[in-house]
Length: 311
Ligand SMILES: [Zn+2]
Image (tube, rainbow, N blue to C red; front, side):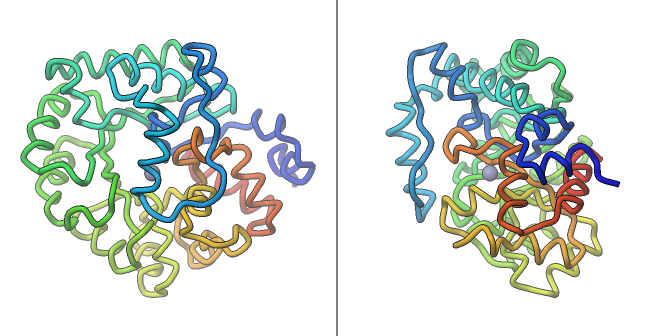
C-alpha cells in the first residue's frame, strides 16, 4: 500500500511531504532558522551557501561573513532558537531534538534556569505543537574543565534529555570527554556525538565504545568498513545523517553515491536530517525528496526512515 508520504515523494509534492509527521534529530539552532523569519525580525538576509566548502574553518568563515555575529549574543541566540522552531513548524516537523551549547550559560550569568527559559520560550513562541527533545551539547575545542563547570548546573536542572558533541572532529581525542559522558549517562541522558563526518570508520566505533553512544551524528565514514557497519547494526546504534551537509562540505561528491544507501543495506539504523538548513538551504522535506529524486532510496525505504525518526 502506498502511504501519503510515499505518494508525495513520487509526485514531487512538497506540500504533501510537509503534511507528514517527521523528526529532525540533527540540527544546530545557530544555522537552523527560517530565513524569512530572521529577515522579518532583524532585516538581515542570510542567503544559503553556494558551492562547496572543504573544511570546518571555511564553514566558520562563511558563518562569520553571512551572519555578522548576530547569533553570538544572548538575544541573538534567542532569535536563532525561535527561528529554528518556526522553520520546523513551516516544514511540518513533528519532533525535534535541539538545544543549547553548554558554554551558553556564560551568556546568562551562569544561570542554568535562564538558559532553559530562552529555549522553552522559543519553543512556545515558534512551534508549541512540536514534540521538543531538549539537548545540551559540548563544543569539541573547549577544555574538559570548562565543559564540566558549565554542564553541572544544566544537568542539575534535570530538564535536558540528550547530550551531543560537535565542532572540529580532531580538536581533542574523544576519550577526554568520557568522564563527562558517564556523568550524563548517570543522569539519564541519551548520548550522541558528531563523529565520522571528517574522521574514519574506526573513529566512529571508537567513539561509540568510549562514550557509550546511543546515536551518532553523521557517522557516514562507517560505510567504508563492513566490520564497523555490522557492529553498529548489532548494537542498534542509530546514525542521524544529513545528506546536503555532506555534499556542501565536500564529504560526499554526488548525492547519487551517498553512503546512506550502503549503511541502510548493512542494517544500520539511519535517519535523514538537515544539520544547518539556514546555510545549506534545504528543509527536511526537501532532503527526503532529494534522496528520492537522486535514486538513492525508494519511496517505501524513505518512509520507513521517516518512521524510524519518530520511534
Ligand atoms: Zn551537525
